Image (tube, rainbow, N blue to C red; front, side):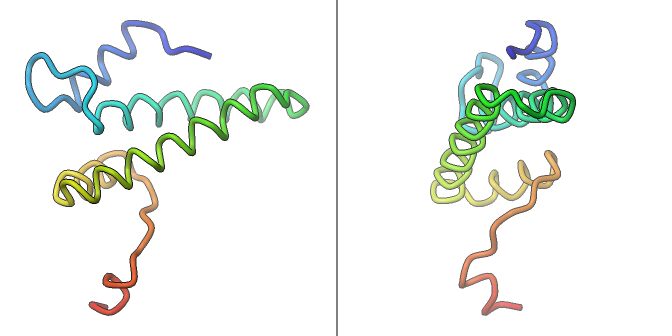
Length: 99
């Protein structure tokens, strides 16, 4: 279930870091998030589609790995991206100690 090109371009324009940025971690996470939303809608209608379910699980795993990488490299960008995409973020041990 690929996203239409125009929709993908809108996402890239919204989350890019500079003019020619099409593959930074933030952009990849944003595109994956939109694909996950679309596939989730599909799976609500087609509950027995296990091949698509496996693809969804792979996308979620890839997004988590990219978010972990982004958090490690640039926590400020990670926090703003999670807030923009309205994702639940995993709280680390240091976050719990601060609160």
